[in-house]
Image (cartoon, rainbow, N blue to C red; front, side, top):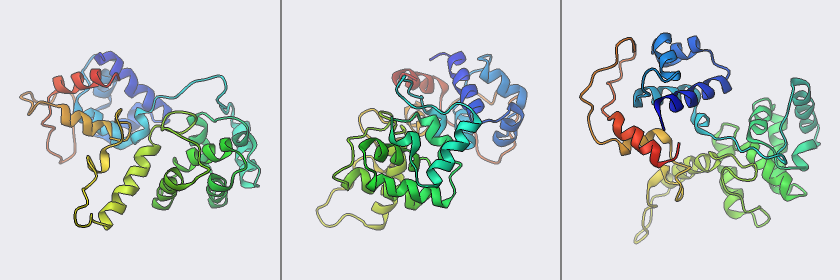
Length: 261
């Protein structure tokens, strides 16, 4: 992936999060002009910039939205308000009809009050159709909280009526597996392996052959060949006390190409 394409990806993630370039400069402690050059491809995307965007925007910045005519997408604020009210009153509305786009799950999940969240948690296991159960799981996977994460794990692993879901397919967000892994990692930490029981390979970050559950920054770091001899690019003002990244940009870009990002 070229510097321009990576910059476009960062810009799209920032805009999707509703963040201005000025606000991103405040959050990342890089100058606004430098970030503008990165997003337009004038300057290369370094591991430090990548990690800073990841901290500011969260793991969702790497999500590739699945587009399909049968996926339900909410268009317009009024329709979103109606959908939220419907759920909070106990009516699934579109969530019981067709798979919902992940953008819809996020938009609704972030607007749910505790009653609405409880409704989705109930539908995850008691929904009348597989569509409603899967959509509800997808929404809960976007809601922060350890309890929600552990419920996602339980449904995916133990619910006999649960659909065969794969992160990123059929309305289930690509990072739902990562959410489950984080909670599972904490659970494994509390319960060390017994005698003769092997530790899970890869630890908290591993997540299948395509690595959807492992944070991209961690993969980038692992792929980097060694300390970078160069200094920070001019104009890339950094005001944090963190030590500069010691990972080479060449390895980072090469790894991104391998990941087809």
